[in-house]
Length: 554
Image 1 (cartoon, rainbow, N blue to C red):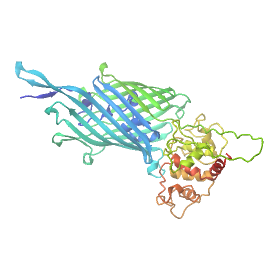
Image 2 (image 1 turned 90 degrees about the vertical axis):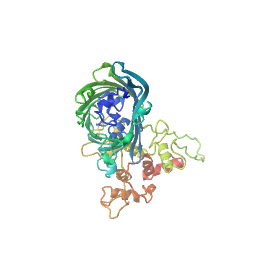
Image 3 (image 1 turned 180 degrees about the horizontal axis):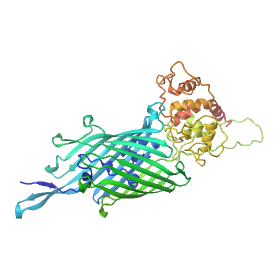
């Protein structure tokens, strides 16, 4: 009788304590978090959030890309790719993880007793993949402006695992399954975040399972609950203030699982001596596979990161167990976005004319952008405001009309629109420093009561503005009369008792919201750059400036 043997040394199967489908996110989700002891729950503000806590996607409204590669134990190839970007419904992400091992020998035992021999009959390849579809947003989008400092995220995951090649002995050793992750992040302070994730939380009855091809054998995918946080110890919005340096402390706690897998801790420190360079170190606890998941290894980690014009280059060193040859080097390349270009459009000095003769005023040459096609609904307002120096584009000559505006960006636009005088100095908010580029604009906008701070003495400059908030801000900017209350619904989806109903009614009556037509208002939707340009172009101050621009007076 022949007994097939598969000689595979897959340490990741052992560390998963016998579970059927390997969740590769347990190994690592990017060189940055791996260098920080595999800490992710407190919120990674780039595409690596896809793989552990998708709520972190809402921390960064820019396009995010991440890719990573490494070789585990010198044999297992590990690959990660993730991309996320803003959409009208929130931040969407796609991720892919894969671990593979090729040319695994398949042997059989022939003969018996003293004549027994091990003979190789072929080879097979092992591969395990996880595909992620992720979503992240602030709760204020869902609950009509409430919960601005709470972020929510979810991921749907598809698992593929098995062997390829190797003859009939391996034909049934493949399977597929699905599950889901859910995460929350609470921005407790400008310098502190707390996070919670439930990875693989779907019950088997709702599809959270892995099914092997052979006999439709079903295995569960154990749920993992993780708690974590990030403390900004040193920096511009930190416990200890520093304009040039930053120090972050990250801690994750992973609850115990079934199968005697112990609870685990993950700790990391990230130090930025200056804005382009990061130094990282941490401890990543893993269960000892040799002890059936009962023991714990305190794996040391370290890393270096470079951030240049939004592009990130990260390296991580990670121990796996006591053997020095098991140490792995990971490399990530990504993109996390750049700051909005803040240069005003150049204004030409008027030509001095000696003889006052009639002049033919030429049509002004408008600044335009590559992502504004002909016929785009807000093309003209955007071009007028760009030419006037009120709103600018990005270094790649795009305007990104569908990108959501932050509170700081809106303050800048309003101040530029009225040519307000600005003064440097402290503005009185814990999360706005005197040296931040947008501080004079925020100070001018707050002094004129266009915008206000929050009860916790924060301004939240990076927080995105909802349509409801924008209606109130633009009504104040334009000096509209806002009634104490409204008797009729302004829009079908805005209740009469909604806190912004009077401001929405005033803005609608002034004609600021004509672009919406008779459709729903969407009070919790984030205001886009195109919408801001459209509304601003209808305010009296800016309307007069556009009139002068067209006539050649400005």
